[in-house]
Length: 216
Ligand SMILES: C[S@@+](CC[C@H](N)C(=O)[O-])C[C@H]1O[C@@H](n2cnc3c(N)ncnc32)[C@H](O)[C@@H]1O
Image (tube, rainbow, N blue to C red; front, side, top):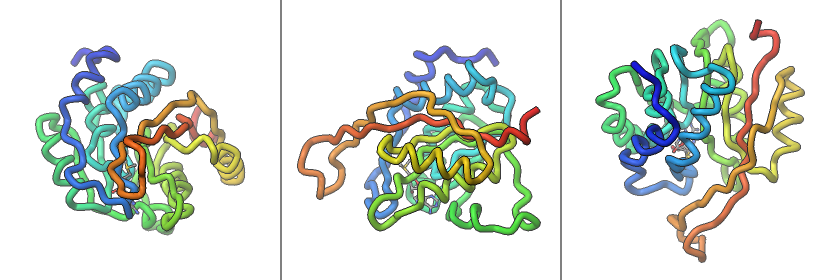
């Protein structure tokens, strides 16, 4: 299969269904096709971390990153999410791709499981985790920890720019390398009642995190 160009990938992702009724408690907001396409394209074009690789999408929601990885030539993809309603939408979105599986699972269990129990391995992990604010404090870091446990190449993740120092420090504490690849603007729709404006512009870091010892 020939690899999709960036624009074509973005267009394919635009056709996907989004959350029907986003759940505030699970921080459900979809990654825009624009950002998802760039995240995945960078992972492939700069690091060769998608084509032919086994890719996990943690907190996959409606599956935009898993679907995009598949469209970019990933060998196989698995999306994990705790929410069955989101997984139903994801199922429809990835149906025709043929190499995307979905697992209903709390990602916190993946970060907490013992090593001898969790022997699942992926080449690459992509994710747009909950930002871990308010009631979900720390959840972003639990996702990152889980991603690092699963990935043998690298984790590509999105984090609020305001938490950059914390993310980099945590990665260093775990013995991982972390690089901010880009600073993005995330236009969160006012899907939540407590947002008074139509949309909220949030500065977000696109980060690559990896364990040097796992990479040759
Ligand atoms: C910011 S949304 C991103 C959705 C999707 N990855 C995307 O890029 O459009 C975060 C996702 O994490 C899921 N989530 C929240 N808490 C979770 C948990 N503890 N375990 C697994 N998934 C969780 C939500 O249901 C939601 O789909």
